[in-house]
Image (cartoon, rainbow, N blue to C red):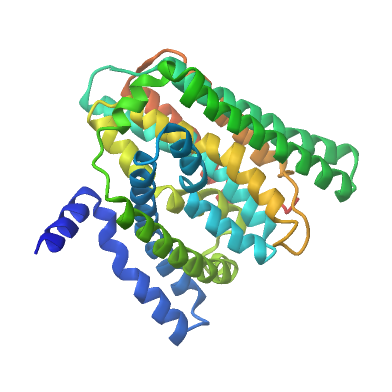
Length: 365
């Protein structure tokens, strides 16, 4: 009875968990109708969303039991695990355009859609909201560094068209980005942790699962996400053509929204509760994790998992979008106050990007 009540409480706290019914549905559909790519594409999206919510909940529980340093490392590793697993499946299948689009899309989605939505929803309930400007600008600075790292191989490719140079450069940049992110965690969690006190206090208010349950959920859900990601990647090309979308649009918009659904729910709820510090920490923190940790890990992993090494080079339009999103993050975090109309502006920019990708898909780099 207690377990049943606990499960009901979890569903009430995270309504996305109702969608867990689609996990067995998509597995059974893949076994019975493996050629129904459009149906499998839709069902896999509906199945990944609640699994992402469970991963986010379990990651939070594990991190809260370990201490700041290890907890920061776990958040870097597991905080964007859904996007990482989907990208690894696409990497193994050689769909590099989908991988790069999902990386760029996740950065832009977290920076514009999640942050803009938090400002809008929080501002509609509260006239003006305050947040820790230092913490927000720190994350925005990390994003700017990542944008430079993506911009360099894209610019070099226009001068030197050899893939060998781009791959070597990307590998070196990946190592630099991971080192910078590790030092950033040391800075924010150890040497200057007092500057980030507001966000840390907000996170400690959450009730955490017992560590045994959290670890068990992490293992099981990670395996399920990996399995369903293979179904998703296997159906995405045909399904995208049937629906009228390209892999670039799917990676940039769909994968980013699906993978970040759980974090968005938490960020939006926190903003409505006048905890904008937590919302900004989730949005910009997740974006910087993807840019400085997930993307470099994918570059390094491609040497072992993919058909050939992957570079950080992406098409010019995506570089421009990431750069604009980074600039927007700096502008939004500069004042230390949030109002609803700022959210409207950020969401409008995101809508422009989405419409552009849908109508004018870029060619493969």
